[in-house]
Length: 285
Image (tube, rainbow, N blue to C red; front, side, top):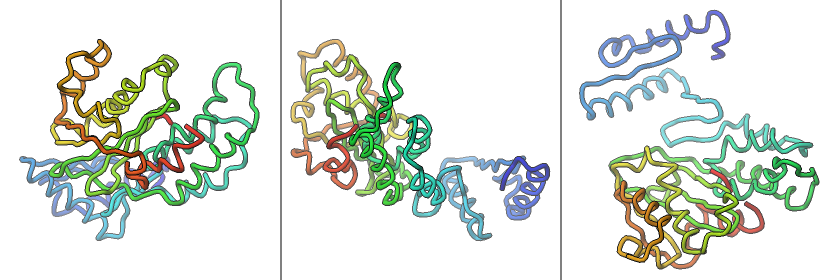
């Protein structure tokens, strides 16, 4: 419903009040364009949060948040927005396309790395030249969006798993549960990070995940898989530099363990798509 229309709030409130007639002032309040769900206990709240979307679905209403659909299986991209990306002509500047495609970066593993040839055009003094690398950077998000996974909903009663990777082009990670993707995150390296030794770069990739997903991970168990063996022993090392010690303090806020998982080909190829995404182009969160 377009809320720019004069009568939209009134119509919406009237419809919601009818749908939630039995729940109003018990655990549901409808106000303007909001549905407030409240409860006395966490257990009741979980139950109420489950029932409200079910009630909407029973009346053939979809929970649509601009750009994505939320349903019982998880979150999927809006087909109309995907179509807009697919039909986008070769850009004459990078900002508009990267802005639109970037909205879906949580659906695309290693997005920042893919987008790097395009985002490089936004630097001051950069000349707009359409190269083979930029054509790939333009086409690959389109291909990824057409096969974007359903992002599964969170379940705080299950442990999280994070796979991460680092390269001189960027950092990337994927948050998962039960071998299903919850979200992707990636970012390009800052100029000073280009000079990091390999160990620091790999540790930066580990730290990137709790920075992005703190609201998910805090208070929950999480296993981080890395192909850099020395990171497994980071919590017991004594010869850390100040930067590493700072990162370690951040990690210690979380119930997080680091597991060695040899071979980049094993780091959930379908999730991070390392063989296709991480070769030839770049990331940003």
